[in-house]
Length: 394
Image 1: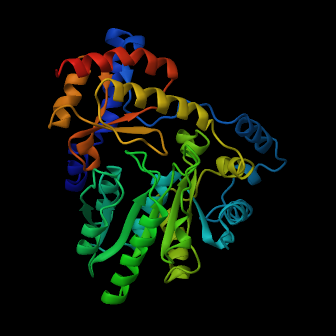
Image 2: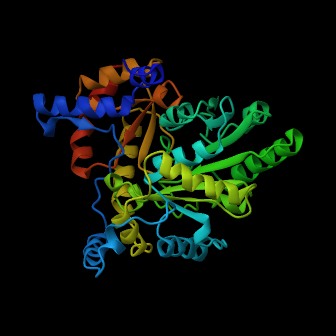
């Protein structure tokens, strides 16, 4: 028999992945062209051409051990130095290779840092709506998740409730901006107010509280929107990054953690994170992809393609009577369901071959998430279905 903890995980397995699987079944039954799957944030945009060239270049390296061999658990030193230099150039930071730990995507990085920081029973605060896997990641290390209820007027963090719930048991706070599922970018004003609350709490409780910034969508922003770099606002910030979205490489599982030297107990955190990388079973991030991304630090995905999808879907849904906050980044729309029960709404949407994810998955009932990182053609074909779905409630 499997462990009791895993029984709980299986019972509450990701509804996003479940919807993705259901989409495959529906496509087999009705034809793929007649199913409109907005469930999974799987980029439809191809990686930049330079990525493929870089892979070929790395594979032509003279010494196989420079490509396929073991390295320090934190990753290749020259790769980490290149990542640090790129961040310093972009954000005016002062990192070096010792501040970078290469990880198996952002998910691997979050598990590494939570294992590094958490003692059983310590609390991790998240702001609804939030990526549902945070719940499992915190449970992995016997932490307690504390959810701050959403401010549905703006989907900026509810700082009043945050100030009330931060406590002597709080070890970390996770933020995700641009946000999955809303596409909202947290403003500089919000970040400064958040940091002020955390500094005040540290002084009051005499503890170190870490801000974990989960940033897989940092490069996917629209209309000239700026995404604040959080280490500049709060010293105890640790950044988790992934190339899954910025270079369209979700299956390659490559990212990094930034652990600034200014963070409390930074040297021990860096050492422990390297060990966590090993004992969690990752050992190190994929060597080929480390070498590849180091050659592609200036490359960008085709954000314009996502922007076209954003405008096409957002403007038409408003026309059909849906309510939705305008996304500023990422590739998601967070749409108010046309009935109180978001799961019932999702079930009705299936009658029109629309696959959506209930907002309750993200701690925000009454809404649904649409991932518009799909082909523009599919969006265009789906519009009559969205219109019919809306009309079915009139």
